[in-house]
Image (cartoon, rainbow, N blue to C red):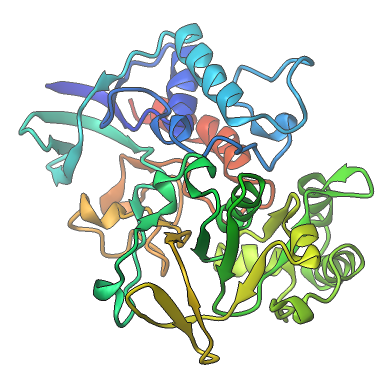
Length: 374
């Protein structure tokens, strides 16, 4: 199948570039491996809300109206994605999982898992950060008799009522699942490997993401100390609750490591109340217990791995030398040199303001280049 521009993925990133190309009357074909658009968002945990404001989270050409709350809940965001796809007549070919993207002369040969091939002038990869769950391994894990699941399968805390539940990892997912488990009558514990950068969702009534964007306009030597001061004033010292204070300022962690600070929506309050307990890194599993590096052992009915995801772009671009950064993500939205004609949207985890904001900003930049190259 000959295609001018192939968009791979129909989540927010794929829809954003599709909507932008549609507004410019540029031809494209979109494929999606699942049977629905916005698949990941449809299957996130129930209580999820965007951590960025609606002003920074909309897709190109479709701002959120006044009737939307400041922080949009998951179900409402999914409905917005449906409306966006309908408005811009985005009809992806569903059930198409891409297995390889290879240069073929001046074009790109894209092969699907079922063998179907697309001969493309240009390809936009919009498969996202959350393509492949990270499943760490620990000694004794195979003898643990109770369920161990990844957080991608978590819907809500109802099935865990009355149980001791270990959450492994305290990113935004782990921190928020602890709240949900507590609210459903479970006893949540969180295992962390080291210091955790935590900031409140709002600072003095203003969204933290908005404050971070303002600070990002200053030199890092000025903005980083201000960010550290704000963290100290609003969050304080959590060492007594098992969370060491990081040396790295929140914005520096995002900028240098691509790791988003935890946006607190109530976990700290539960820590201080004793409703959530933080434990150190795991040493080994027993049959129904887990031993930690401080040699303490606790029994658990369930273990949930809130250990994140990989974009796993290298899995379907075999010739990727020089394309990816040290974290395995594309190093920029527009491929150059032998990667000319390849584009990547939704992989900028280092930008202040969140990935959805980055998607909105990247889409017109990519569309401009596609227009020039078509």
